[in-house]
Length: 276
Image (cartoon, helix red, strand yellow):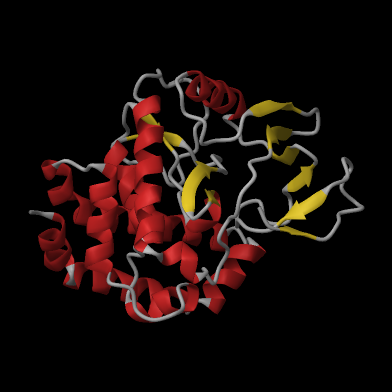
């Protein structure tokens, strides 16, 4: 993972880790561990991450414990994390396919585990229909650790919540295809226009998405996009400086309107690309 500078005011010492929005500037590495703000559902999430490892999924950090000041300590996951603007190696079809395979492995392990329905799972980006597995909900490039050009692990499970596997695939497609109009995509995904229909098919194929879910995916992507827009709007309304800055730098609400129109206009194209 890329690191930046020291953090002398951090009580545990360590190096600040770059990336992320929700906990920007508050995540630090100290040797083999990472210290970060603990989510409200940390006890249930930590139990789930340990259970995933016992069921054979090693693509996530392991919790070490909680600190008295409301932080969590996790094992550091070595590798390379693509940060925006995303480098060419992270935008190859082989990298995309490896993300689909990693997500499938996560869901296969999660399907064998019960979800703690009494936990305070965040609803910010959760599947509105709910579901029986714990979805990551935020599989964006800077939350994926690569080794030798392949996705090896997922980090930052802060927004994990129960949902349908298809919802997690849709959220992942938003960031990795990406499901953005060309003008919006250019700022974060340089190097020329990406073939969105083809890349959506690559993701679906690598995940092994079934025919009924392929037919439903474009509509679920639109739902997920609206959930992300509401997520940003809530934080902007709260005065969050990070989200206010990002919104301003990326074209404001005009960009979100443009993405919405682009998705609707190309819905049939995406459906055709996904189906045999």
